[in-house]
Length: 395
Image (cartoon, rainbow, N blue to C red; front, side, top):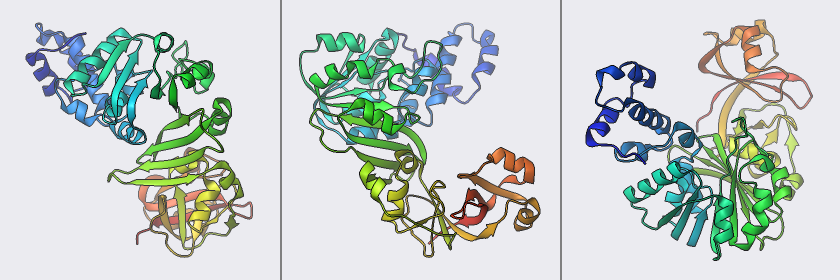
């Protein structure tokens, strides 16, 4: 593994905000520096700036190729994930760059970081020492080889399988990931009290729960309303239905959460209404978790349509876990009717259960992006297309 001299680290810091291709064109100006390696570090740090700020701020941290950085958890999601568990021993069976392992190390007496790529494992091991994670033991081996030689029982085995196929295309189904969690699951459950599986948000939750079997909990985690990952807590001791937790981590450090089971969702009573004074759009974690009826029941809201997943009320719900709007009225999907409502010919457009895309609507109407008006193109309870004209609501 390559570490960097003080001169090289100074170069990285000085050029951190410069475009990598521009730096490579200037390589002849720095004949004594390994420009390709330094530019790769700069590029990786640029990729990681939003998700790993404390790592980027440390000039001694070594970064791997950008793909490994892109596939790693963010500090915020790793810290949240770690907050859900604790114990003596956790095995991170697909350790990668080591972000999750580092945060698990704050909650467990010992963490074993397993990574099959030798260079990536060496980088992670070096960074663990640098960042004070002395209770992480890093091993260069495959997940299956580790399991075959592992004779203890861990409190938790954590996996984040690679979700790229043989042609480097993104895959989502469990059987297409590496390692194959479905094949390894019986062995995993013999060697851990709990198995935590991280999957792509694209994977259907109902299908995953059916395939995995003894799922105790499902955590859908969004970061500032962008759905990042879904976690399945699997245990031989699990009984009954899996609880679904929809969590949205806020920029303020706070959190929005909705918890329900599939049966509770199916049995929740929902009423329907035409748009009232306020309109609500749940955060992405709730939508991914499938809490469409549960959210209406909990906050005493009406739905606009069974499939629109927009909600309404006559009084303002201040703590709604999502976006809230004051609705000034409705319009038909008609350019002549819509444009007089938009003095600047601008609006933020959202499509929910509507036959056309945002791009198609903008092309037909000429409405530009931006402004303070929010237009929701949707279908109402009477099965008719409708446009809700809104502005953000405040208390």
